[in-house]
Image 1 (cartoon, rainbow, N blue to C red):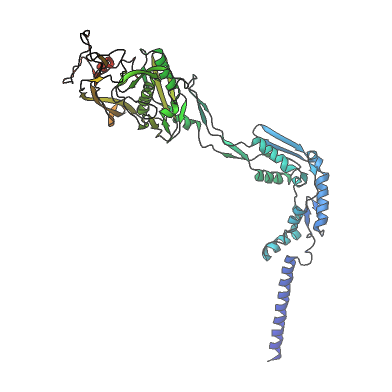
Image 2 (tube, rainbow, N blue to C red; image 1 turned 30 degrees about the vertical axis):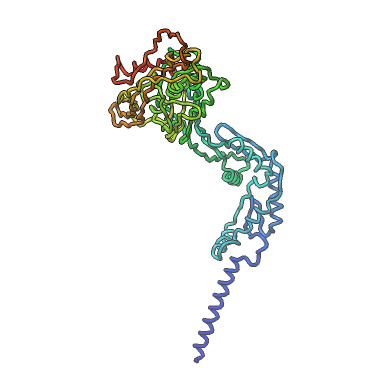
Amino acid sequence: MKKGKKFFLVTLSLGLVVIAVFAFTQFTYGLSLFDNKKFYNGTKINGIDVSGMTIEEVSNLVGTQLVDNRSEVKLTLNYEDKSWVWTGEDFAPTYDIFPEIKEVFSYGRDGNLFERRRAIKEIKTNGKNFQIPYSYVLSGLDEKLQSVADEINIDAQNASVSFDPSSKEIFVYSSEQVGKTVDLERLKQDIDVAFKTSKQVVVDVPVIESEPEILLEDLKKDITLRSTFETSIKTSKADRKHNVKRALNSFNGMIIQPEEEISFNNITGARSAENGYKKANVILNGVYVEGTGGGVCQASTTLYNALILSDLEIIEVNPHSLPPSYVPLAFDAMVSDGYSDLVFKNNTDKPIYIRTYGDDNKVGVEVYGKPFEDGIEVKTRAEFIGVLKHPGDVIIKDTEGQYSDKVTYEGEYLRVKYPQEGYHSKAYLQYYKDGELIEEKLIRDEKYLPQQGIIVEGTEKLGEGMTLPENDVKFIPPQTTSISSGSIENKIENQNPSNLNP
């Protein structure tokens, strides 16, 4: 190799070495290998030059300054019309700001090589003034902030309604309330930021709001009068009136939740004197007899008709053996302990509210709940199918002496019960929209079976020479025709007077 060419290569190699050394020194400058235990020159904290100091030295120096200046510190928190004000003297001092100083110290030492180099260059070229907030030396600040939060925080409250049928305002509503929760983390951050630029700061308390699930407007929309139904007790005796109102009062103020089932018998309880019922007529084997709780069936029937007009689901309902006169055929609801009940269910998706009322002339039931669709109205229709002819009288010997005070001898007769024709009737629910019938459905197909007349005859033989006085009991044969003057309703009223109705 020629001498000149060799010299060129040596020179080039040396140049590359110089460049490599320069680059290495620049990176090691960036890595700050030679001042890794002390703050970089040009570093200030809260205006104090901390160049060349250790973390411990800076922590003591800056902490002392912050504590010494506590008397100049004032913190004001505002929320709506409330304010909370504290001065530095309201806090116990703390000098423990080592973690914060250590975090400042990491500036220029974290990140990749290029990020660290840029940070160090910024410090050494232009200087860097870091701020440690005064909040770091205010011991007990967290507790004070929590006390503020406790004053502001409130759970979201749903709108509510109270149901009191006895008051002038049947429904009393309470408005919903928006929930409020102080965002403590953000509040602390806002205080820290504010204290970095001033010793006296005013900070608005940040609050997170939560909406209630049930609004007053929606609640009111879900409660309206769905139906009302009344029956007359004007001609009933006082004890029967008492029983009707006593049974209905068991439902007054009732709130029925969606899908909840209600049994009339369970709600009214035993028809006994101990349960507040008095003696009145009941039906036993097709005959009116005196029994405790007479009239309760009128209560169940009044309730039943209000329920069907409200389009609630009827799970169980039964007719009487003798049709009552206070409602059309197939619209009665006979109840009796142990074997006949009125059971219904709230088939809407909102609560149902029941109000009952009564005086000496009438009793009634109102059903409140979710309104029907716009323009929808529910009505009822009774369809009389025909008369079921009675079988006439049957004569029964008084072998057990049950009527021995009335009849003794053969040929002596006592009428216990008149034969009575039966009836076949159907009940329908009708749905109207804007006054036009859009649907009709059959809900009952009832037969009130005809009743056989009962005549009791004595059992003893007449003695020799004895004669019986004339007997006015006339035997009635099976019915062949139905003789009716006026409507079926009037006929039923004549046969089963309302003052005797169960």
